[in-house]
Length: 183
Image 1 (cartoon, helix red, strand yellow):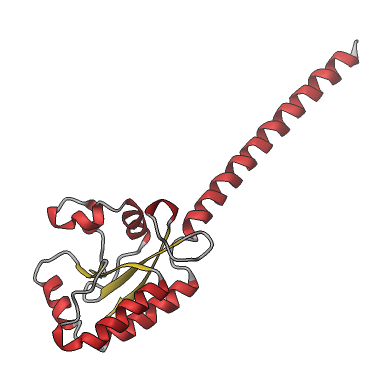
Image 2: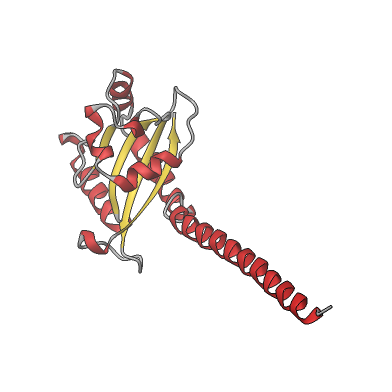
């Protein structure tokens, strides 16, 4: 009996099995690496601290009116998107402070949402255009869990360059998100 042919075929089969195993491991590694890169854009610890302190600052103003609007059927409240509408004419110094804070922290937008965002991410309501037109924000909201229906969620979108500097043009921006619970 010729054992050389059998050893050769056995070696080819072992190599094929090892190659298939390595391809599977490589594929799993690449998928987990890309999902980790996406996850890093969401709820970065430093951004969570910034978001928490911005929430504390905004709570010193009257957020109850914005919460009532959400309770009365509006899907969300845009607190900041280029300029703030939260501060009235009697808060001109606070508005200037907030504008400077926005520039220093590279904030692109601040949104007050109901805590349960499952209806918002479906984009069936015409009133959710600002959220549904931003695919990065929409993807972030889909990663959030639903919970307390009586609470609210403050979501802040930060826009920086990859070096961490302020964004000047939209093409060089890296958007990250953080959210905290507002009761």
